[in-house]
Image (tube, rainbow, N blue to C red; front, side, top):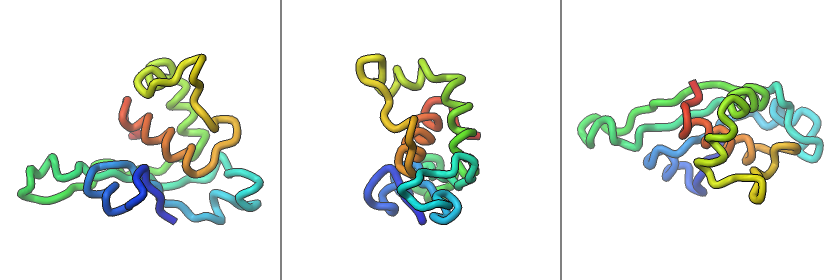
Amino acid sequence: MKIGTDVSLKECWESGYLVMDFKVRDLFPNGRKNGIDKDAYVNFYRSDGGAMGLGISGITKIVDTCACWNDLMEMYQRHQESIDSMCGYNEDNPRPGLDTPDEYVMLHLASDIDMYCGLE
């Protein structure tokens, strides 16, 4: 299954938004109601939105990596204060879903990490 930070996967690819590609049964081995497997690896990819090719060579894939929830949390915790500040989260407005993440919480956390310091 593929999901993106925009409703349209085509728009995600053309605009350089992060996309997450995963096998539902791997990410949710006990069903969606029981949460994600925090050790299940998923694929993240993002294009340059055509910026690198300046319209000549088209759109290029610039992020293509695998990570699990635990990997993302490790990266996030190293830069938590700066990432949260960049995204407008603070004590009064905490980042939602970290205790009970689903695929969209995972995607959005990965996107924020990617924008701050990259996923690779």
